[in-house]
Length: 329
Image (cartoon, rainbow, N blue to C red; front, side):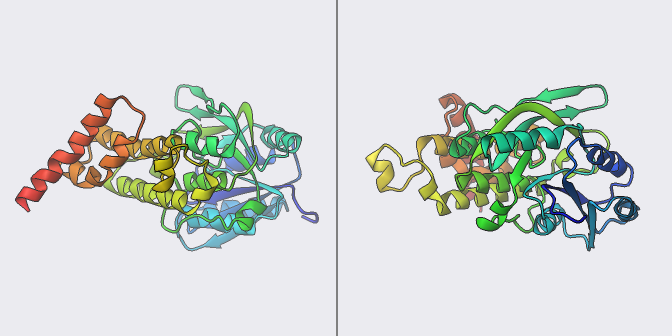
């Protein structure tokens, strides 16, 4: 490829031989042609690396790097570091995209001079394809941050075209060892930088829920829970570090104690409440284990805007085992 690409498509690859070609073919079929595909083969033990190399030999817009297995966060970071495009987007190897994705996202980004352009996406199962809208009532970055924490904006990078220089300008990087919802933290960091956001209410990305049965996002274990709680603690740290970017609380008491604005506190509490509810749904902890795990988040539960009865039930669950634990131990 002789000229600088307009868009870099970053594809982290690990043992994806059975569906990788579908992904790459959908990228090569884009109506927008000024792109590069950066494929990071993260220590695959199947033929994924060979598939990547074969495609690179056929199209000089494809660049491939092979590295020992380090996890998806490291693979994504390697791709970002290699990206030469003005904009970049991530595509997972078990998914595929519509032909006009890059053209329409880029057009919207240029039209609105946006740093990040968000679109809707499709979730594909064995029997249907469901359209998932992003619930964005306005594109202010801090509002988008709050809606991200509420789950109104999906935490994936696969439905977001991002100005690549932002990663370098604001030193935004993936957190080492966080290989579950790792892109959620990138979105949070970008929103905290006060970027210009645009929203295109169309779906181009097909999030396949069937072909990759080993995907970490489809299994929920104690390891998943611990990683989710790590993400919450990192998120709290990011908010504390960049508190100056948030709107100032109206209450004098809140300003005196350097509290987050009420909306952000409620949004942040929603993250840990979501983790707690998800944990209960999958029944991976005993009541005693639940209390020992979530006892320290009782104040966060209280700061949510859920009904008081719901908040108190969570607090009771997070307290009972702690108190029993203190008596026994």
